[in-house]
Image (cartoon, rainbow, N blue to C red; front, top):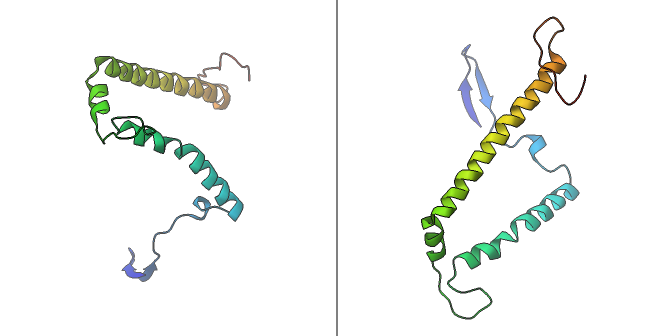
Length: 124
């Protein structure tokens, strides 16, 4: 621990930075569930990543490590068109979801005398 002076000039002790209690698993069972989820979600990506940097499928003998597949992918204009469509779709749906959620919240919480936007699919 280090000693510091606060705004009033008093000396105090500053604690070492640690994770908040809520960020840690509450029990062994919860930690085990987290471990299983991480293994089941991340596990399938490891063979895919390995196969993506090999010149042959990983079940065939031979082959070398190469980034040729990524060079081909990033040079393809259709890939960048798909990226553009994906970004546009994500931004549009995010804006619409925030606007719709805000309209429902405004219609629910604004005072009766003020301007309110009612949620169009549910009556409060």
